[in-house]
Amino acid sequence: PPTEIILIIDGPISLELEKTIHNWDYKLNLVIVKLEKNMGLGHALNKGLEYCKYNFIFRMDTDDICDPSRFSKQIEFLKNNPNIDLLGSATEEFDENMENSFGYRINPTEHNAIVNYAKKRNPFNHMTVAFKKDAVLSVGGYQHHLFMEDYNLWIRMISSGYKVANLPDVLVKVRAGNSMVTRRKGIKYIKSEYKLAKLKIKTHLDNSFSAYSIFLLRSIPRILPTSFLSKIYKILRK
Image (cartoon, rainbow, N blue to C red):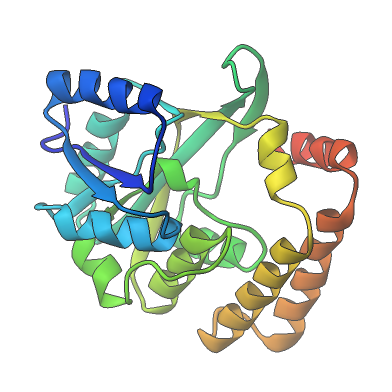
């Protein structure tokens, strides 16, 4: 099991969730960090970094399920490849009840392929990643970037010369129903896509023509009906 488990509560939560956390705290001796009000994902993640005692940090979302071998496989890989600063894995996506599988999200595994893939799509499943705390802090930690705090961080790490990799194994099962698709639509998401394109150019991950062309291609689905967008996501999943 992990040496420490840090749970960030980003603002007020329901009494039901409070009880659930209390029950698990009794079993796992959690390090619970409560934020008085919702500060957003980037701020909450940075607060979590402050409480981490160790250099290897493993991300986890509260509604997803880790494979029992996740930590042992990632730790073994990191020990055998000490040059790797950021490591992810594949995921299997399910509906909200974890009953029906939608498919797999499998990203490139080697550093150079990941760098090239990052120009077009997020090269990591954020809930699977393990990274070195000092590497993340050296590039400024998480930054506010609506919907894309993780993608933003990966780009800055890659552009700063840190080495990255993905395991092909499915180490996390993810809830990815209609609510996920709905969140990835609208003008706010398009604005975040534009900010992402500018970051790719600023960090020299990509050139202007390519970055803005990809921005346009990525923005089109954001204005499509949810049902059509769901079909696109299913096609993209292997």
